[in-house]
Image: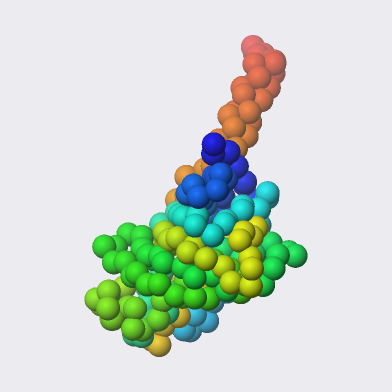
Length: 220
């Protein structure tokens, strides 16, 4: 039975569904690319580490992970030239080091492009890195603009005798031989439910204060 966890943090929001063995693990994150406490940029690379999941999610061999990172507001990324894409969930503190054999597809949100591969990596993460050969096989154009990343894949197995691990840190990194550019802003982002609640309480308090205020009228 799935248990829904909602985590709200400054500049990031998460929803994680924690499954029983073999059921899909769903993690959804929203990051503000313009928040420098989350995102690091250079001419060729953009990377972001979102707020920590609490509690961590357990992912066992045989589980399917559906992991999405949305960009806030109308933000997007444009990459030019040869590129690399990497979306991952990093292991929680104290977890065993073990490679994971995974088969997954990375979707570039806001486009019709996706890349699929099977590989072994991830001594401290799940999620795969997609390099030039994967990108060419998928037929991506030399310039692409997207507004998020989604990785859907199966953890086929862990090595080193590991059968399951805890993960708590969503992140991504993209690299281009040409420019890596952040577009737009998070100003148009839709407030999270908790933010709406605070706004409604604020409106109510303002209305009550106005009702209590007495207005003095003088006649000359």
